[in-house]
Image (tube, rainbow, N blue to C red; front, side, top):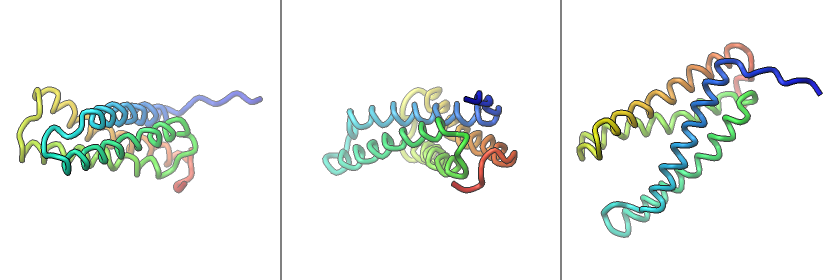
Length: 137
């Protein structure tokens, strides 16, 4: 049996960031699902728990992409988009409703939501450019 070649640095970067996104989706989704909507009645709680379940549903896909990074193409870039869109949602929420907690936590979360997908797409594009994986999956 041939020894596996080590992952390229770009693949390691993408894998670490995808696993980080997996952890965020699991933690956030579970917390949201268990606690429900903080206010707004049955309609808000129904929608909140539905979206928490969608959040949870992303976790296995993110983890699978990290585990099979050598075989992944543009799917990884598509997985980064919802994280980035979540980052856009944070300043919109801040502008409409104000700070949700300590400023440091808000800023760290927003920064992570913007940086994770940018780094994932940059590093994965570098890996695709090196011919490591096909351009389409």
